[in-house]
Length: 178
Image (cartoon, rainbow, N blue to C red; front, side):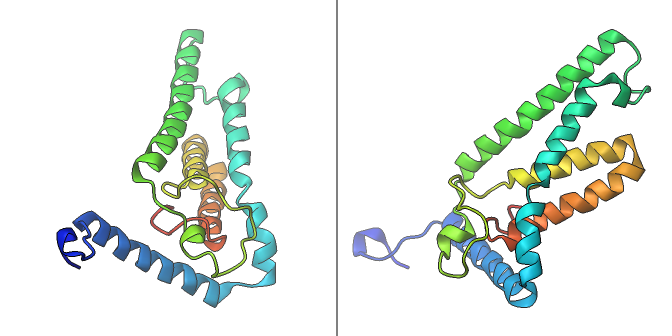
């Protein structure tokens, strides 16, 4: 390290902290691959990571079909419209939050930083790493399902955790993104 006017490398406190976090995260990702990587998981995780889209579909069903709404939540037609607006607003918040945070933090993905570590099992993502939208969607939907029904929510939370872990295994997110 040194002063820029003296030809040295000058890093801010933020850069030093982010470099330390990134190195810590890369060590975890390498340990995951050195410890559990196998053909079975290589086949399963690229498919499992797509389950976040199943959560989106489930959210649409719960949002638009009265039969799936809990009667205590929606008592009248006016309340149903209000609830629908709240759910749509929540979906917009997730999307805007994801786009806003990704571009504000602008964290490179592990597969960009260490491209020679392994061959990716999915296509190289083009957007930034933090936060993981797959995990955010899955956990949000699973929490809503848990609120609706513990019998549905517990398996959904397990699947959401697996979606989050799949993002690490696939080397497209850091542990601190998920």
